[in-house]
Length: 324
Image (cartoon, rainbow, N blue to C red; front, side, top):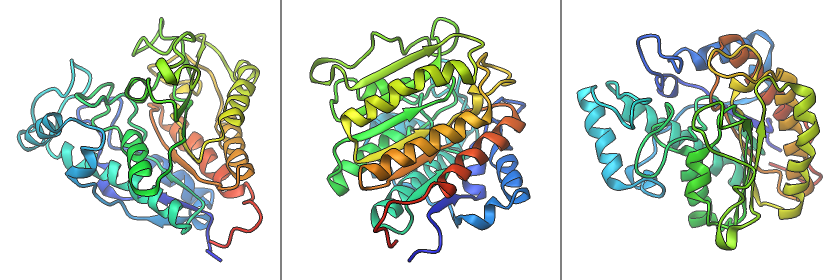
């Protein structure tokens, strides 16, 4: 039997995915989380994996080759914008971003091979990146690449993507808007009050994918009690669709005190969401849960919120029969 249920990816290669000069998405984010994990003993309850790089061919599963080439060029020069203004290039941005994607792919492969039941990557969940451009501090969409790799390499068609970041996961949503097998559930601050201004309740998928997407808008100031009222909709939605693999984007910018958002969740909601998703995955017979750190710009919230995600991954029992 495997010693650990859960892996966590930690290393300078992904820590370097952070923008300089006081940018809210700075290179300190992994460190504040891991310091708290070590302080509370969580580091002794998980397998620590080193980051790995994705290949250019991996990136092309989701991203246009011309965009990948642009990021490579801007990474070498250290200058330029990768979108319309939110996501500046910096020296080495390509290398940092490909380690985010590669680490997500490694974690997915670990889960599919049964080495670990669950996995967490703190610097990942870059959900605003589109196939043709960056967006909202996100250069490459690791979740999107993982979805395509699951299908191409493992024949997994029905994948659930659940997002509790304060911002709508528009890069994932619109890339799979017509895909009936990408089961999408996103709880986020109302797009009329926050970037990227998308993710309204009527956006439920298009064509054959109608009804495979669930967007729940939370008003500014919404806290744990409001979240608890709408969360059962997500549980019922996932039970209806029975996905074969779960991806959680666990952004902590939905926790009270974030400097650029107005939601007021507590880290307890991050624990409860993660634990419930693990329970659902176990009840469906596979137990596959890949959690990605997502956004979050308050250091204390990052530390506490992500540790609650990992604690739920560690503490929720596996289904009977798992031998690792």
